Length: 103
Image 1 (cartoon, rainbow, N blue to C red):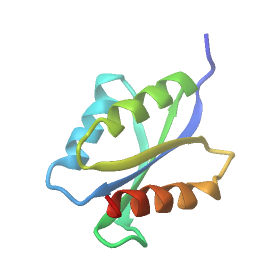
Image 2 (cartoon, one colour; image 1 turned 30 degrees about the vertical axis):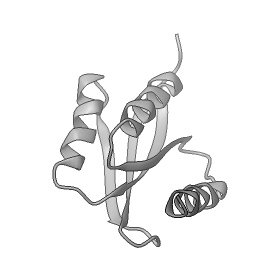
Image 3 (cartoon, rainbow, N blue to C red; image 1 turned 90 degrees about the horizontal axis):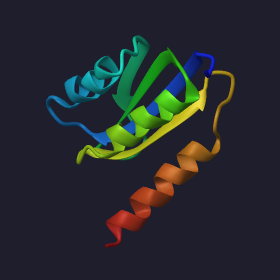
Image 4 (cartoon, one colour; image 1 turned 60 degrees about the vertical axis):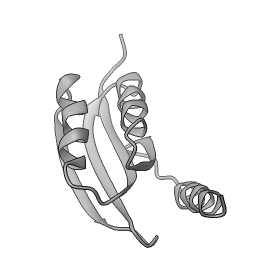
């Protein structure tokens, strides 16, 4: 059985009514408590950045990210162990947004 540890789940999304409730329900259905939550406009116009911190297993964190990404309003979601940060996260989201704006 995997050990639980703190994970950061980072979500970039359009700002839609009810989205936070939908995302928090994903955590609730899996019995994962959200330890902290931060939401703010991102550096990308029209996109907000949600940062969730939760104590869970890596497998459960990745499953949560998969379910979150299925939401229509979600642009991209990432999961990191609390002791790691990803400088590549910004580049990934920028690349995704640029590719989808050109379509």
